[in-house]
Image (cartoon, helix red, strand yellow):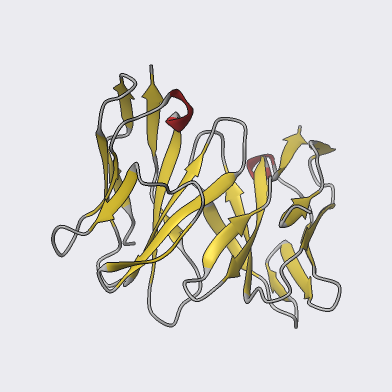
Length: 110
Length: 113
């Protein structure tokens, strides 16, 4: 079983749409959870950390369900600049080494 | 805003040659990481480094790889004898004590011919 799995994508949505990303992880001992975004041939950049209580940052909302080992990201009112690959990332172990999902590519169309 | 820097941005080498990839982590960070991303694939953990020693390493990080913090600012990844399959983007990351977020450098694109 893969450690971190994500929707295969790609997602092509019109501007203004709401889009949801799903992620599951296999290691129940994982301790930290994130969504990063990656533009083509660039480094991963932190979008937001994810907590069990859920967190919101403007148009972005992330949720964590530890019992079902599930993480989600919701983007409301999507913009052209949201076009990127969204990476679900889980931190494990003493050093909090990151395990990355394969990413889900989003294209927001005018 | 402080950031992780990496040099070179691109490196082309012949199979069997040694390469050294360099990183300057964010200055007050204490934990350092190397990851790689083969074109079209996911980002994979290679090694973590803390207190001048390796904390953890993946199966990818075999005897051909080594890391070093030669001074107070640089963090290097050496590949002793490169193989074609080492061609990838190599990302350095760092994080501060008590923080969970890792900050990534822009990467070095390595091409082994």
